[in-house]
Image (cartoon, rainbow, N blue to C red; front, side, top):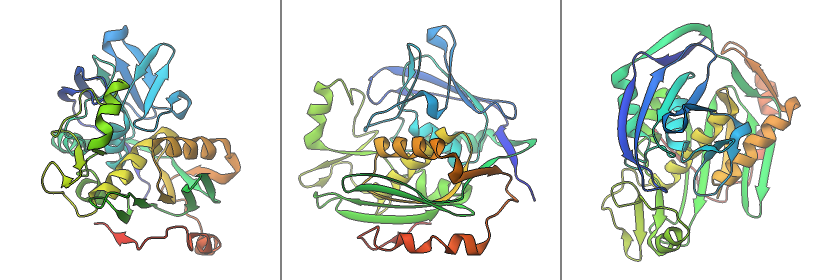
Length: 311
């Protein structure tokens, strides 16, 4: 059965602080019609429209920012992740400031509001971007390999020298149920030793123990983790959000090691510029098993860490 596009059944609203700007922001997410996509509206800047598009990506390693002319919308990744993860294809996102609220550092507050508002089918088929051949990006030891698949799978490995984080790898099929339960609650994180340097650079001005996991010499300062591998799961959360800039839900197996927003952006750019590597179709269009098996060997040895399953 062909999947249809979705939007919210009714608007949602929240207020919060921007992680990097430190400014208080009011956010509204409203229903939108089929094929309109996700569009940000800066109410404080003449209602300027900033579509969630890879063409407007203004790269950075600590967050994802969209720019259209002189108007920016910063730290969009957690909200986009929630929209993408919950299969919401079309929405109008109104802001009265330059940055999406960080709330608790995860996507869970957005997901809860989406559940309260409800979703509605728009009666028009979803168009999936299905990878048909591998795409790889690499920067030193950092790497992402995207392989053809008939669903959206993410495998993400990290390896930090700090023992409170260490080496973690998580693998999950990203769909509404697994996203809400196993990805959305994972919070963003930073090392205490990096906080002052970020603030001197004008970043993390709104950061606190209420909206980020902070790792000090003796461990996590916030208390208990939501998952033993919460750090790796948050990387998946970020990846889901950054891939929303493709403009269509992806069907591929993404295998990442030591990635981040900059490498995610490089992957999005390479996918979009390699038109021979993907096709657009409905949920009923599937790659044959023989085609998927053709590339399975490329996974071997990419991740030097044991893989844990989420969900």
